Length: 281
Image (tube, rainbow, N blue to C red):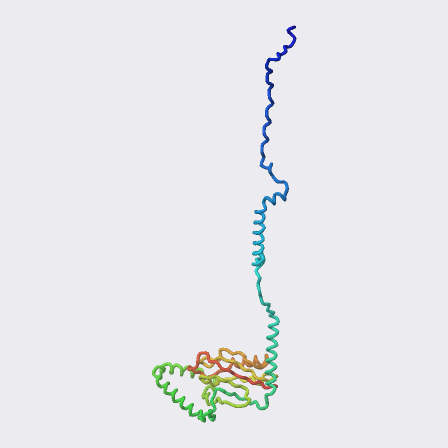
């Protein structure tokens, strides 16, 4: 046997172990390995949470529509539309109807019976009696006696004032002769007159009155509300009713130029009326 021949193991000799292969390393577990790809399976697995969410949204929707909440809407405002033009037209129509009624009433006036006189309607008619048969002249005399007694009690206090006032009255009465004995000149007339005036508590008498009866072509009556001061001067005048624009203008002009008696016992603003009758020309 040569040395190059391999040695054969004996049948009774042990066979050496071969090297075993390494075991494979286990695969790394990733978070998305168990992700469900089927939506139905995912919904089934989360059915409890989905049911709670759907019920909550339904409750919120019912509350929202039941309370009628309008998100982002402007507040509702109510208003009343007033047509000023319509109001002006109605006012003009009202004035026109009032003028027509006044003109209709004035057409019934008997112009031939109107006398060119001035009537102080605040004066009492001494021949009249009241409903109990009492003579008004007796009442007037009693009132004068009482007033005289009261004046006598205050004479001491007013002595100085009376002297100064008498000087003032004398100076103011010089320009107008009608101011002297004005009470005797004033009278109350029934029927149609060109001027009627009335101032009460106390009664005021005229000093100088303007009569505009023949200054307008149309005929009618104009009533003017007048305010006097203690000196008998007109401090304000406004038309109350009657007449057209021309008659109203003349009536206001005449009223503002009027003068009445001086009376310190009268209020500082003594209200009364002057009614002018215009005779058609």
